[in-house]
Image 1 (spheres, rainbow over the protein chains, first blue to last red):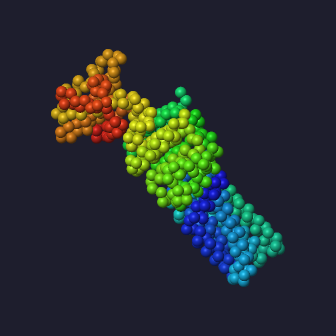
Image 2: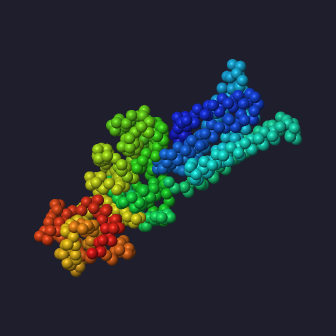
Image 3: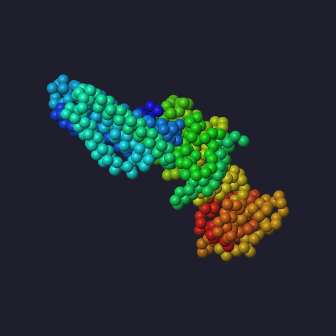
Length: 210
Length: 334
């Protein structure tokens, strides 16, 4: 299993998606310094690129035909892609923390992600993979490029809504309790989205022919 | 008889093509050539054998188990007609990804094969030629002590030198006991050297499954001037329908399978009747008879008799072409 995750991560590291991913992380840190909500979207962009590029490589080289002929089950193939996506999302956050903290220390106009930013970025990343992957596993990359636009719209609406609900004036209890509940709820929703998406992907991929 | 592959009554229907009851067997330790023109259903059959497509009905057994069984897949190597690998990666990186998927992966064997094939571990696969990519696939397929190798037209598009090298390597791999090879190809020349048996597929149906010896003994090419292309002249080239039992090709089992003709000459393939073809409309045109002339059967060399008709052994190419090209089969109705 880990070798398939290694394959996906290695492929993305050697792809052209690496440069825009780093640019997005840098831009996110600057945006968060200015308290712009765009920062969260920029933080989920590396995951977005990863989902798109890994699907593109499968399509371009018909990799499934090779790997599914090896001792690899279809559910392993699907699971490895989800794990790779999570890995990329967490690596992005770690990098953002490290770069943001270092930048702040050096007096640059950047800010490391805070708890809310982190949770919303995880939420956005989970939505990205949760929506895109089942379509990719059913129809393949080429027929599902349109889904990327939908992911962007859904992400934008969902993150804005979550942010809105977390404002103090919309709280019914104290600010701290509301924030905690909200953050936990968002994480729970993100995990649920991933779980449902994984189950759907497995079911769809099981019937796909190569 | 222990079997490496047992395919029974495989059926799969697509919008414009269907596999129609494909069955064949590969005994352990043998090489099976799976031939047929483009679109015959070879790749579809292999995809089903590898679990990449599901049959509508029928069964596939590889090394006595199901193709979806992980322990069975551990014992199988395969070579597709393309690499299907991320070509931005190097051969070394690919080995590091594929290796851990097999319990019996031999890293040193893989590296030594790469070196022997002249493949640089640090070179991107995209920079390899087509022949080098197929050699990389061969290195992957043979570095985990596979008992069965499945190949889907690995030599198509390769020059004769690469093909020869590839076959040498495959031949070397086969020297170890009980290793079996399933070799799908439309380059029948490649099979002359290594195949023990041949399955001919055409339009989703198995036309025949025979050992190479059976093929050599039962097919003949007959050539002559176009004026000689008549039942009267060709009659001596068939034993009468009621030939005695036990005689070669007795029992009305031999017929004219196909004829190619132009303004001046004709070339015909004679061989065993294909029972499957009885269902097809043009079968009515097949000549009845009971075997090409016995004299010619005993000779490897072309033989011309007093009438000017030449008989010779048929190559696999001849057999495939005359058995599958519709235009020749229709002409068989002389």
